[in-house]
Each structure stands twice: as C-alpha cells, then as structure tokens.
Length: 306
Length: 290
Picture 1 (cartoon, rainbow over the protein chains, first blue to last red):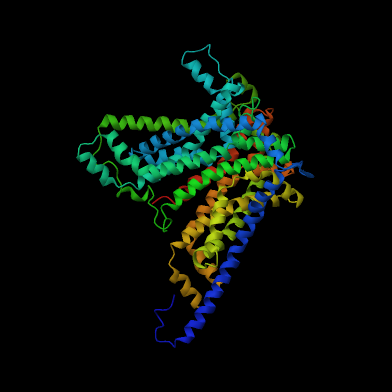
Picture 2 (picture 1 turned 135 degrees about the vertical axis):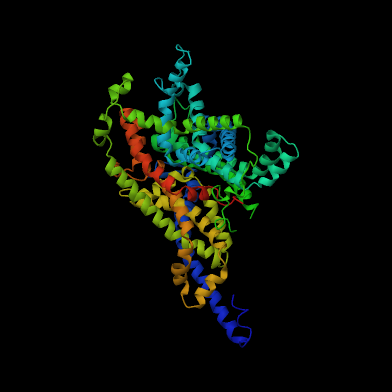
C-alpha cells in the first residue's frame, strides 16, 4: 500500500483512488482465477455431482433409469465390493514396510558416506519411470521362469518353484511387495528432506552427553521426523487406493479371479468390462469417501504448520 | 510461507548440517558403504532387467543364453515407437502448457489480488487435489465421450490439465505469498496494469515454481496409463506408456521387445528427472519442508 509515501496529499484524493484500485484489483483477481476455477468445476466438480445421481440409477453409459437407494443396498450385497475392500485392507499391511525401509535408507544417506550424492540419484531413479514399466519388470521377477526362482535355486533350493502371480493366495503379496518398491523413492526423498532440517548440534550435544547412536535416533531424530512420517503415511495410503491401477493392469489384470482387484480396479472392471456404469459410479463414490477421509487428515497436517 | 524461496535442501546445507563431525570407526564406514551398494543394486534392478532382456531374441530369452540386437531391430514392427513417443510428447506439452497458463494467474490472484470468498474458492480447488480420477471415472468418461473429444488428443489433454491444475494453483499461490506485496503494488502504480504485472513482474519471478510444476507434471503425465487408455479412442494415437501396458496385458508380445519399448518409454522421464532433480524434490516435499 502507498499510504506511507503520500501522507501530505489531500485526504479525499487518495481515498477515491484507493477505492477504485481495490475494486479493479478484485476484478483482476476474479478474471485471473476464473480459468482455473472453470477447469476444476467442469472436470472434477460436476462429475462428482453426476456420480451421486448416477449411483442411484441403472446406467450403461447411454441411457440411465432411476432406481433409487436400493442400488446402494444391492451394491453392499455384492461380494466383489467386499473382496476389493478386503484386498485394499490387506495391502495396508505393506504400508509399515513402505515407511520403515525408506526411513532406513534416508538415515543411511544422511551419514554422507563417500559418493552419497550418486547413491541418492540412483535411489530416486525408479521414481521417474512409469509404474507400467515397474509392473512389467515385477511381473518378470515373480514369473515361473523369473528372477525370484533363479535366486531361490542359486541358494540351493533347486526343487522349490514359486509362481506367486498365478495363485490367489500369493498374488496379493507379490503386488504388495512391488508397491513397497515403487514407494521407496518418494518416501526416501521426504525423509531425507526432513533429516536435512534437523539441527546437527542437537545430535552432537547428545553424543557428548554419552548417548549411543540408537538412543540418539530414537530420542532426537525420530521425534523430529514425526511430521514427515505422518505425511509419508498419508501419501502412501492415498497411493495405495488410487495409484495401483497401472501395476495391477500389467501384472495380474485383477486376478487370479478377483484376488488382486482393489477398489480402483473394481471401478474400471465394473464399468468397462461389465458395462455397468451405474454400479461403477457408486463404487467411485465409496473410493471418494475413503480418500476424502485420508485427504482431510493430510490437509490438517499441512495446515498445522502454516 | 517462504518455503520455496529458502529450501533447506540437502545439497545446500552441506556445511551447516554435517551430521557426524567425529568420523566413526573405519569398519563402520565400510559396513555403511556396503549397505549403500546393496540398496543401489536393488534400486537399479529394473534397469538391469530391461537392459539385459532387451538384448536377447525371443528364442534366446526362452533358452536363457546368448545376446543379439534382434529385439531392437524389429522393435518398430511390433510397437509403433515413433508414433507413440510423438503422442506422449503432444499430450505432455499441451497439458502442461494449459496447467501453467491456468495455474499461474490463479496463484497470483489467490495470493495478491484477493477477492470476495477467494480463500474459500482456493480451499475448494486445493481439496480437488484429493479426488482420484477413479472416483469420478464413469461420469468423466461419458461427458468427454459425449462432447466428442475422445477422437483426438483434446479429451485426454483437458482431463490431464484439470487433474494437474489444483496442485499447480496450490504451488503458485504458496510461492507468491513469499513475494512482497510492495513489488506488485509498485508495478501497478507505475502503470503496468494487471496483465502487465502478471507478464513482466510475476512471470519472471515464478521461474522456479514453473520448473517444479513442469517437471512433476511431465513425469506424472508421461508415466500415466488410465487417462491415455480410456480418453483416446484411436489406438494409433496412443502414448507410449499405454501402448506398452496394453501389449503387456495381452501376454502375446515377446518379452525382450516389451523391455526394449520400456527402455524407450523410461528414458525421457529419467533424463528429465536427472536434469531437474531438485525441482522434483521441492515439489514432492512442498509445504512441509520447514
């Protein structure tokens, strides 16, 4: 504001000018914000509303018939929905690993061993490539003639043969392991940034006081990182519900049976393979609610330090 | 928030945050180094597999022995690599251009040209970041199809742009909050006008934020499968990631050729990542790195 620089000017003149300035500025603000608002409303806002409407209808993409709330009770009697939710729930078990491994790697990198910058670049490299490609490689890893069996044979268990993606009971485990691998880069990045903000004199002081490495890690490093761990947790859970599509599409196609069908894949499967758009829209809303709850937690976390 | 202006990045704080002043025992160092090597080997495993497998013919892959260029020389007859890379490039550049052209002015508006209810509108746009495409997939697909936009690239570009806009608005707004109001005010008073201020003052300042948005969105869009799979109806217009995924899911294409295609699809994203690593880190840790 220019108030300070024009104290001697007549009282009425700057006031009038500032009024119009303020209005012009607000107008410019609306004009500048409008394209972004329009894009988000048209392609995200309106579809949410439509999804609510269509979730009460029988819909094949072209024509829709109003059914009413019974579509919801019917959906919750569908075993596929519960299978997908159970699969997502079981995959949650991979989250601790997707956090602990990157945390260990970040601490390793933070020791600044010779060449740590090169190591850092290498560790983040898989983050750049598509989960389609990573899924392709993982499919090869777990395949009957894949790397996993080669490793097992090399260890001397020549009669043991795995085919994890081929069995209902094991395919989800293979998917979970792949998911952990794909999350390592991002989470390591987060934790490394957290470690960089840690005041080194604190560790130094603790060391002088006679604290061991483990004690320093538990009492100083970990508490300092808690906010970063929380954020990584939320991001990992959201990825688990909304980013596995590529992996599943390439690795298992949701099978065997429905063994690796998660919520997001069930939406795709129901809509585009079964042509049941109404039920798929309904499943979408369920996914929306789940990620919404997780998202609110994330907003809280970001908001808490602004 | 001045997060982006003073990022406490790893590379800058070398002297300031040197974690271990007293060098640990030598053996400990070697153990650490060994552990780092092991992790590096695991993280490089996908690249190793892609490289080695692509250098085999299908027969050599099945029998296990020998190498040849056969999969590479016959690659274009199985995967239309050139066309697919071109499609990916068109999709990425157009979507990112829209995201920037829409996000930058909006960020300027939400931080410096605040209007009635602007905070509320900003929060709504930011919360759209949390909406996964799968949640609104069916209505989105039907809308874009009914508008006749799935024929070319337009539909996919608009969907990518809409999905990327909330994050870019958030990033630009946060970034501009760190720029002093006086700078903009001075420009306006000097007669630049609001468009002039946006073009001559805000745009030059915003280069680091523009780079962050561009790098993150490039990797996101280049690597995406779902939008390209559903919102582009001509199979000949498919981007490379989608082309690969469809062939892989079909289970009839030879694995060495799929791996060769994977290398081509991974290369641009890797180069962008290696060249602009710090922008990527900045974008991913946006908002909490203090």
